[in-house]
Image 1: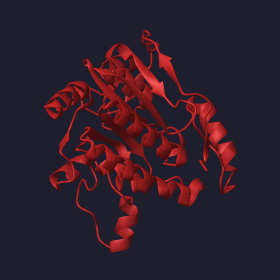
Image 2: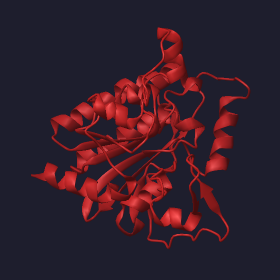
Image 3: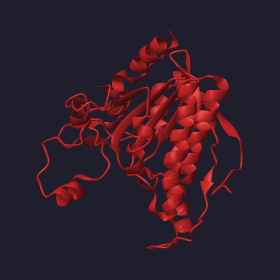
Image 4: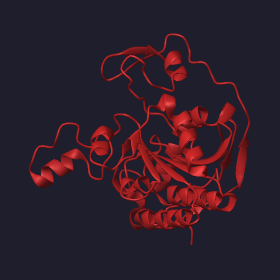
Length: 280
């Protein structure tokens, strides 16, 4: 039995002019650099003064990657049920409903297919704004279906991870997604269809422990937090101070867990280069 609802097969998103950021809106990066929101948006949400990568979601990544922002969204209306009747400070269905109203999303992942510099690509992108990008049954099912689409159409897959890990409100059902997605990716590997994993800030928990680190290429944005447990938990467990920059994408790269780090402003062209190499 599937722990989600499905109401349609997909929607077609036409080309649309990007909304202009209102005058007078500014963004301040952690280093203190200040940039106008319009300039930030035109710069792929990267501050040119300090190269700080602002956290963005699927809407922005789709605009950055897909030619003319044209794509077909897949399985757009999958929504979680409440298999455990979970209640903490509020019921799980209530939390889902509030997150859907606040973000305009159905869950913490969106799938789309379109062209990236003329090359067909399936993209599954996680949204941290929806319950911390946590991986529940819908996220697992969406990524699995993205793999199925790639297999059927022999199209490369990109998964963009931004997640706090497994969704506690679904407990074991959430953890089952790790094996489910990993098994699907094994089929993609057997079919010799490229899978690229992009890790962004933050990528933690069961997401890091499974599909985020299983790409033919594992790449990351600069300064992203990447790890399994959080630094505080690790420090308290081992009783030692952690190395400087521990769990940053640069640290993870230096220790052999990433292939390279890519600036978001260069992401589309870097992906194009990789896909053309993998075609040969």
